[in-house]
Length: 324
Length: 279
Image 1 (cartoon, one colour):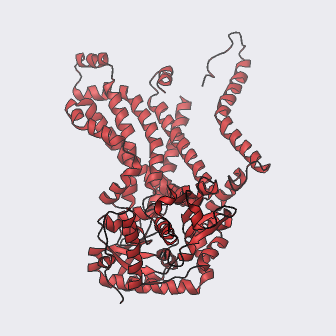
Image 2: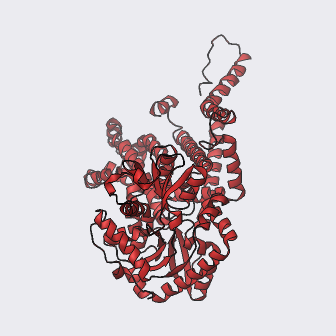
């Protein structure tokens, strides 16, 4: 039957194309082998690691020292720390709150380095025409946040500073994508989040920051974490990493035009939004010092008080090497 | 297609082909009526300002976004990588599913040993397996492929098992009385009569393959369609989200087309009507 034959030829052709495309995909994900010692770094979009990755200098310098850098991108901190725990990555760039939550859950992480404060870009958003004029007005209102992240701490800390308690507001736990929609549609009255979500909301969703992380509410720094055992055996790698990251961050401060383009490409956001985000922060990466230990200790203490973590933590025990 | 059924006994021979041509035209167009009218209405609503472009971009804007994505190469790259993960995952998962389906179908011992464990695993949401997969397998390609394989395994397993278990006992008895060996019984009777059900499992598994892949591509990923859409979701990039949805739909349709064709080729020996009743 000729119909059956054309059907067969068509199917075989279709399958061949399918396999060819799949093979093309296979070639793209399999990169070449190397004899260098591989260091795997976990990052999320537009973070200091991502800047270093896109600039490419760090990988080159590490290669000169005999290390091959492999970058792994993560969608969220939970998966990233899971990968760090299981040894799939060696270092993770993460926010200020997930380390506390994980340390309390028994993970043997250590802090390697800390970034500069992002306090001005993190905060609680409300609509411009909202009746909420001060943090006191949040009483009884629905506030979107993401549990176990810096937005969780930011609200707690802001409430505490205003003399209010955690039960004064209605907590709505949503991830950023869902929170953005809920906030836009007025399903929540306020939304605690960080850049670039805050800049995006301010410029495209008719939102303003009711309260920011400034004035000691929440510094919301970046941190570089590793596992205790890896850090102990790789002191040299850690030192090199901090040194080169620090150089990348100095570059980022000096080349804001290039940086804005780099970040807006990688985030797929307009340069206007990214400019706003870059303008209200600076970049740095330094070894852990007493200031950041105290900040992390504050997070741990407040989370313990609020019953979010079950263990009292001493942050300075989870620091591999300090600068002071 | 019912084109071969003469609708009018008295129709003269010359007229018949014309009529046939018409019916084929209709039956081929009909499936596209809903998708095309959705796009047309959607475009109209956007053009006349009923639908704000900030809520939902117009089909034209989505098309322009597709063109940009093709021009900078991201779309081709992501599709090919997804296709690779899906294919390898499907082959591995399908092989396991088929193996256990056959084994448990023919051996009572292995069925009591494995079946309830497999049934327990089957209903675990894939999303909740991610932490376990990261711990057990890591975050590389193998992790994504394993998740797809796990997803694909169950429909193939269940259909293979069901197909083998529901083989007509009379046929089996007849085969035995003809003195067929165990191997011949399997290849001549059990497998052919289980095949339609197995192929149905393949069709279903092809659907599961794509849905699992989306979940898999959120594990430490910087490529693939799943990554593209979750990434777009994070920043509410509606145009790219819609591009991804359309691609899913097309890939799903494509795999279904392949499965359907395999079915009709492999099952050509069966009566047409019977195939339909199993569809």
